[in-house]
Amino acid sequence: MAQDPKLELYLAHRAALLDYATALLGDRARAEDAVQDAYLRFVPERAGGPALARPIAYLYRILRNLAWDQGRLRRADRRPEADPAPWMQPETPRTPEQELLHAESVARVGAVLEALPEKARIALEMQRFGGYTLEEIAARLQVSVPTAHRLVRDALMRIAADLPPEDHS
Image (cartoon, rainbow, N blue to C red; front, side):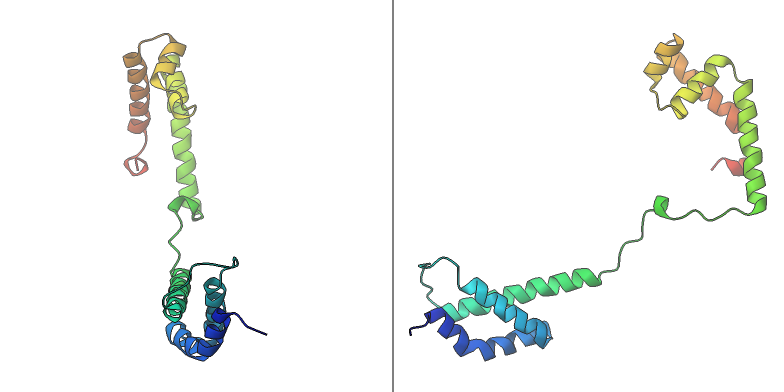
């Protein structure tokens, strides 16, 4: 029974290939897997492929490339994960004092919003809470775009002026 010449070549050099892969990978079990993978890539499924001038060198090259790929994957697995984005971090709970100061600031903002002229309040709410553009605000309030901008700006300035300096962050 005649065997495939590529299989004979592989079997004749298998021990040397295994030693080479072990040296590259540093682990005999991974080297075994790499040598088997190299053979499967060396022997294409379709018969009658082109003849190789130096088949053993080709087999070693396949093995080296597989070892390189495995090493790259292991290095990627060991890479420390990047810190999650700040918005993904859980918020630290506020102390009772911070909670009280926050509630007071919200109450001040609410009072300023109630005291604003109606068009200024609507313009600010549309822009900050509704995400509307100045053009949309101007159309809704039947004013010019610069006037809509001035209404939003003046409302924000009134709120900022009423808050204590430490709340302006």
